[in-house]
Image 1 (cartoon, helix red, strand yellow):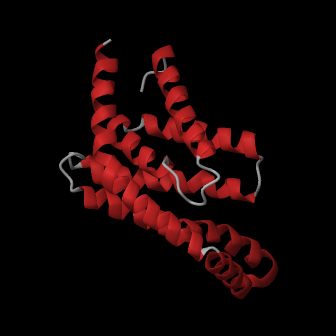
Image 2: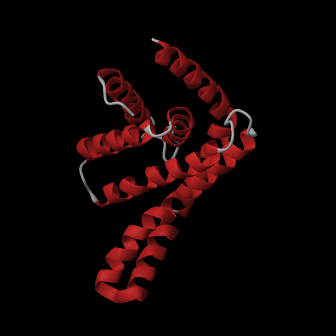
Image 3: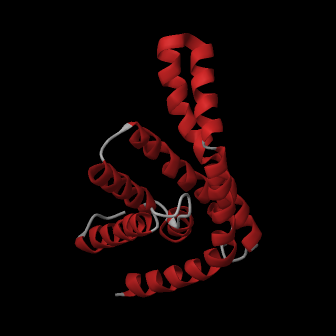
Length: 180
């Protein structure tokens, strides 16, 4: 990717859209559009998405503070990017069934707490070894399982109905963007 004003502007704009949507929907527990947009960005923008995610994560840290939760943000969104890249690499995203995108996004939402539980594993491990780490991670994961279920279900339906239209819109806009 060539670093130029046009790409920096694009990355800033799309990162701020992620941040704004996350902020606007924060009052509704675990209902979010970031997962959907990261998958769409990944399929359309490919490696540029890595910069978008990095800026989004940095904005989250600056705005909400760099707490322990921030460590999870350093890997969970990049993991979703990798999953999206695997799906988009050999497939036209518009040709894959909407159910595929819904299942990926839903599974990601459902596993969100488990992915963050890794942090608690290392915290517990530091003071209680393997059993302390496992206990800490399991307690963290179980305490938020209801929220993970909401997250998974909402991600499923958001992607089921919005992935293909969002992909088509961004893909069309990017073709126009690249021509100019």
